[in-house]
Amino acid sequence: MSADTPLERFGLFIDGEVVDAASGRTFQSLDPYAGRPWAVLADGGPADVDRAVASARAAFEGPWGRMTGFDRAAVLRGLGDAITANAERLALLEVRDSGKLLREMLGQLRSLGTWYSYFAGLADKLEGRTVPPVNPAYFGYTVREPVGVVAAITPWNSPLMLLTWKLAPLLAAGCTCVVKPSEHSPASTVAFAQVLHEAGLPAGVLNVVTGWDRSTGEALAAHRGVDKVAFTGSTATGVKVAQAAVANVNRVTLELGGKSAQVVFPDADLDAAANGLVAGVFAATGQTCMAGSRLVVHESVKDALLEKVVARAESIRLGDPTQPETEMGPVANRPQYEKVLGYLDGARTEGATIACGGGPDVDLGGLFVRPTVVVADPGATVVREEVFGPVLAAYTFTDEAQALALANDTPYGLAGAVWTKDVHRAHRVAAGLRAGTVWVNAYRVVAPNMPFGGYGLSGIGRENGVTAVDEYLETKSVFVELTGGTRDPFQLG
Image (cartoon, rainbow, N blue to C red; front, side, top):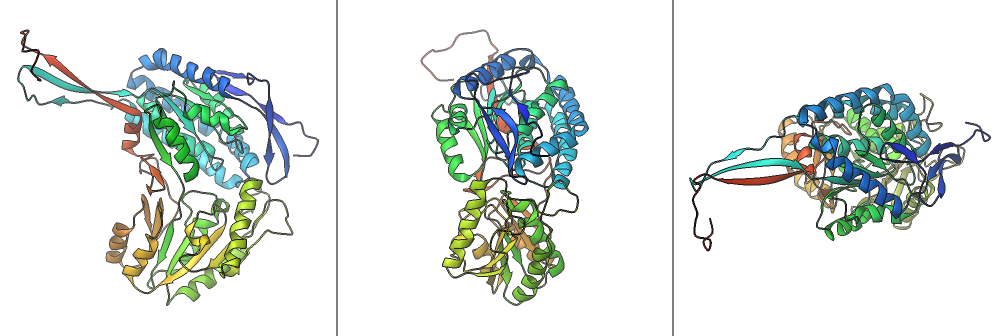
């Protein structure tokens, strides 16, 4: 895209239509690789949130809410097909917004339809149950009903995948949705909503409000017309979202930060482990909540493993994220770029050793940070806090008990990995890790049928898997009096 290419324009998507913000204001989205604006977005505010929530409520109380699970399943299958058909266009929008690799985003978008197919298979199976009577004068049963209007607040990394982890199960449950994407990567979500509407999702079921100011997301999280809030992002912001939701006594699902450990034992295949470490922290420029950013390695193989990881890190090809040979793109936005460099400066100040990388790529300029390996003490800031960039912090252990203690020495608990050829040890350590997802001799693998979420500061609730639909359902208990008689009104039961 040349400097004189016209900027693409994206409005809000409310009630099945692309509309301007009530204020008429707009903001620009910057391409982090090109370093210049590429799109103009509607700058929505609280008034637009009101309109979007009203649309979602009308759809919930209207035709969508009256659909059977079989009807919703048919719609979901059509959505999956439409996403696959539009994968290239949607992937390119994500690349322009966030600088992530086209090769990665194409893979995500081409597989995303699987989530809608999977949850379509659950939409017509949301059954209640009959309950054995304690009192024979009553027949009891339960009904599972959609919670209502869901507010989804999504981050700038992989916005369509992380929206789908909320949207597919909530649609299966029969809910409607208003989504506020990150101001740093909003365009693909607007286009996504248009694709789904054209594929048969009724007007009002999915509404998108983009906005530059933080008050837009705050207005959505605290809106009295919302029944549940589903959020993915930083732990600090997630706490504020939860506080806003609980003021309305609304449920929340929070998928938050992580500082995940990859534990490498001396019997591990070190080539495989090195490859897994690269996948865990340098793929996606380290901008993923599940990044395996802590290497907890047995002291006897530390040097050999670090030599392999450093050699691979130094050979990673940085550059244009749209090119197939590129292996790592830029950091997604300037605030995050400055944050990553700040952590690297802090690591030097605290006496850590920089094994490779350690700063910006001066040849490429822009927002590129070189893949970095830091050898530090377990108490170092770069070890304790989420960097959200291409930075691996390494330190050693001497035995299995210490390995588990070090891996679990974090307020987070999103993911982790065990690298060993000993099947007994693999299961012991996997059981001992306090994390929502554990990979054995692998890293960074997700699937629609495997739950995802974390312990501790990594969040509340689970996305994906059979039980993800439960996050968007209420259970109603129904008692039916069978005798036709009367009872003592002053006695319970």
